Image 1 (cartoon, rainbow, N blue to C red):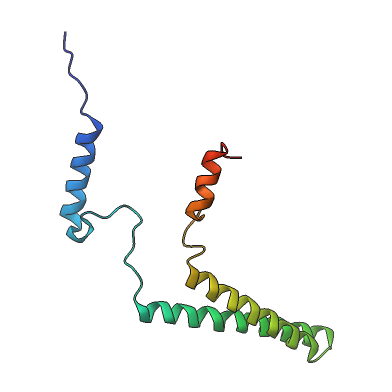
Image 2 (image 1 turned 90 degrees about the vertical axis):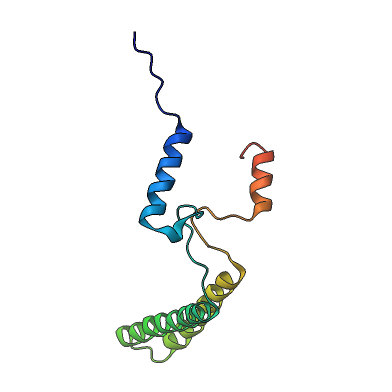
Length: 119
């Protein structure tokens, strides 16, 4: 009888890690999905783009509604302020780290859910 044991999962993990290191040596020690941290300039560029994009979308929607309904400049003014509020909210989320990834919740909320049985 041939009673060979299948390779362990640790062995498979070690072989996969070695193969990844051969393909991309910089990836050694990184987990899947880990990206490089954003530089200060990159973060500032992201914040600026998010603020300007939210304003542009708000102004665009207001302008189109004004043309369509003939109510110049009321919708433009209203949606300018809504776009500005959305842009500021996006900047606040980016700066405070909210929305970094799917399923993101602060650690305190995760601990409370685990203690209450996930309810």
